[in-house]
Length: 216
Image (cartoon, rainbow, N blue to C red; front, top):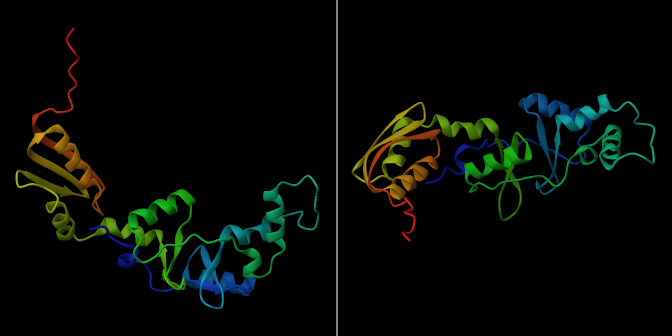
């Protein structure tokens, strides 16, 4: 069974209200040792995210008081953020969120694709923030107890196939009827949360992937 966000998420919702000041945001980041905070409305629903990059525009924008008609959209956005003083002005919107039942593997993919290090976790019905998923939480799946990992792997394998686990790498050995069966087992084990890689020492009785050229 896939590990879900609720199994590893932090139960503290690291957030500020939309009228929070620049100083309030910095203080929240420092208090929780994070690089971003979620911005919420009065119903505790995420409406944006303020990251360290958003705050750094204050320091890097050297021409914040001058506006050029030749500015790109990105430059104009940076200048606006350089003059911002509240969370609603600083934030990037809309926020990327997950729910408690989102598979951790999917959340990790979102973090990688969006290049973000944490995700607000929302209650799917109300949209209210209920926690925060950090990169460190996602990586915890690779430190699962060995007996749990072994039980999940064992459940996928026929009796004729045995396995060993060392440093998260699963080595399969034994005999299967067809090459395609062995490939399917390898891919199934690779999807188990906490498995880093799969090595195969499987023996195949027949190669059903062999393509025999037609005889003319």
